Length: 632
Image 1 (tube, rainbow, N blue to C red):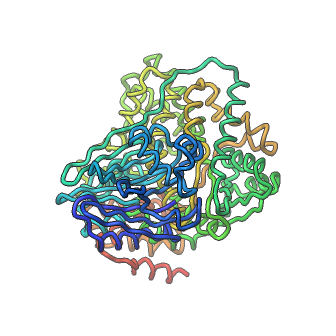
Image 2 (image 1 turned 120 degrees about the vertical axis):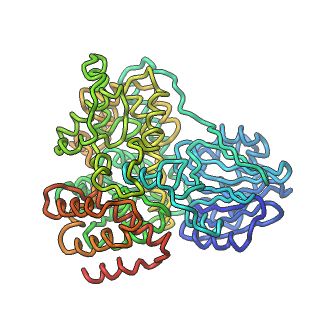
Image 3 (image 1 turned 60 degrees about the horizontal axis):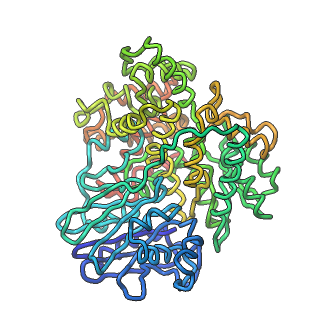
């Protein structure tokens, strides 16, 4: 796992060196730079396979024609190495497979064959062409910009800003996406003219020319295969075991994040079959919803070397550092516990396996049973043309009503499948009260909504559960969850691997009928069957909890005045995104426990801290630190 950066067209060595400084956390073991003619490439390495100097990057072939910088892991590198001829290789790294594979198959043939998580930049000196690529499901990041005849790319936005030498204008559309959906979807970023390369995409650019981007992979629509439940169960067990085995390969210590849920517990169970010593790490917090007891039960059952962290209110002090690493506003509040457990894990292991992807492939969210019911309602035509009000979140204040609201809204909209249809995570339905002049009159439908609608329409004719799963797999998963995992783990030079996101498992789940994913309201039906055979008794029947830090509590009690003074400061309100009276009303309602606005207030805090760090240049966020000291 590494950090990459580069320029095509008048590369600047000094800018590349500055970018490397911003990437050292992703790769503290080695660093390298190549600048010649029209190209400059830079790399920081976290050594995981072949820890020797043979793995140094930028890596080149013997002739110097091909040079590559690579971030990630190619899990089928051994098979490809045999296909290419083992004698041709000088190292044991998977990076060299990219060099030899491009030599033999070209860029299209290479992308058809490699399986893993990756973002790489490859320069072909003979053809004067640069290729940038991102893995099939978007596990590894790649951001870029093109201006004044120069193309620049990097693993992170802070590194890219060093290459650009200036801070671009802030995109109001991106601020809206963030406030409504809690993240900014690819290909956009918070900055105008700065883009994320979407998952499964290939970028091609030549000096002086405009870059082009095309998709190289789309999940195959093979249709459901007629197989028995037992056959599918055996196939899932086999493919998951193979995926875990491939992700155990490393020349450094490997462990696992263990939440106590089905997905991560199954990964740990399969690791325990392969290794006599398994290190597990869990995160919890005091009070309702704490999953640590379940994680302990799994750890005991499989005899792992178990470590725990507990989240408390004092951990909010890491937020400025987290915001700095994301480089743009990112509102998933689980980034805080992810950050803390990743930092703790790095003292024990260099690689962790996770359960990411299990929900989006096997039907783990309540939105999937809702989609199943909504399809039946939609077919009755009862709600085909009903207009669901924007203020739905006001009356859908309880969990049962939110489920009803989601079903009704999806059915009425002909299956419009949007994250957080009830607006409990973000500002959907609340902008009319809180929007400032820069957001007033903003579109009710964000670019994130449009993207999800497009994905939904492309799957027309399939079962609504399968359609909802694909929308989340191609949007919510890479833009939110995988981004969160990559940034929080790589901030501590920790590599995270996701066995459930193996392409063989993706293909298998697409061939499974929907009733094996969601059956009579029961989520992850088939995976629970597997859990019954592999996990401690009772774990398979648990409902999904997710990790929800005590956001509401952070905006009440001792810290509330200090946080309010930041979000409602003159500096914050003068940015024009919020109306002061609307925010004050929201804050008062929350403080008096009339409503839980914790997650919305969280978004306002993250946005203001981001502005102070990246736009105002308050690197130490002085007011925040004073507030923390005042509370301590």
